[in-house]
Length: 481
View 1 (tube, rainbow, N blue to C red):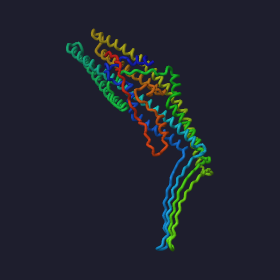
View 2: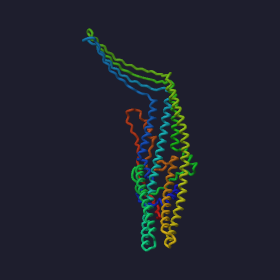
View 3: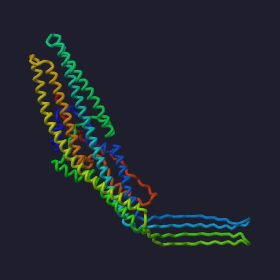
View 4: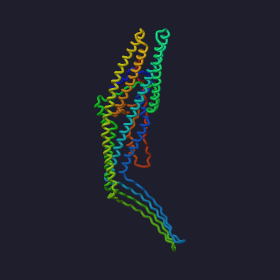
């Protein structure tokens, strides 16, 4: 299907760019640059790293905690010049291990893992959107460059037409009205060319924002063969692999586990403790001859603490109802996301089919207008058509070519919109020449850090673009003006 679509995209108008140099930037290169350096995507990766830390924090709830205490207390008492003095030094270490939390820890870990999965899917959605934005920016630059070329050519044609009209007016073959009509049509063409140049400048600015650098020598792209074959296939793929759909399901599961966490808070909890201590006491009594006392003591303890909530003023019951309501909200959100996914898949499919049909109609329109212009010019030479007929025919041909340019752009954008809808506009699917970011690698790395003071090397949120291929891009066909 990619070859067939490239046949459509290789049409006359959009390929108005002359032969592209070997150093051209392909759409694949632009996607790789945006994937590696787009700040919106990089920010989403950093956000996902924060979500992954929730899993690590929840795992820590299962592990023992160790703390140390030290105290120094010195006391001096006495009614007069003779004082009693004592000094007490204590040092202790306490280890605490959760044993039972009413199922809250297990449910909390499942909720954190579900949110981490939902975060990955939301990151996928951002990646799909970034790739799609790159396609739109790339194709807009190509389209508007083609429109600039078409309108510039129209200006040149009408300049020659105006000169010819003036020459024929001088010999009495045309009237002043004919010359004025040629002049007015030239002014229209120039205004259209100026508008196209302004739109091209805006498109180039958008491209630089999305990709990270200005567009230079863009080449005619070719669509990869990933388009679903039927509308139903597109819907099935979207329901199975759309990042929005998968994220909604994971958020629903997290909300389900949140209910278990709150219900577990009504149950008893049990903690095991173990501690060791050291005590050093020194004392001096100033009464009489003075009595010195001192002692060192070592202690250790093993115990268990059982906590049973009896009355919490209705707060915990309210928290349970809140969690249940949020689960119901997440459940309905999943249903809504499913409907939106089906709608998006259908619309993307229909937009692609409509754009393809528009291309075929526009090609016929261009061919017919080319013949009409040729015939009108010939008839004008023999006097059966006036100059306005020629000007109208030239404008209609320009409009048809611009329509074809836009239809080809719309078809390509619609194809990638469909890919993004089904979750296939990603670096892996498109085989981009870039180091692919793996969010699960960060989670696995973070789980290995048990010590609070251990250095945690964060995974970079930007990636590296691989070396470009040595083969030059294909040269697009030229356009008959």
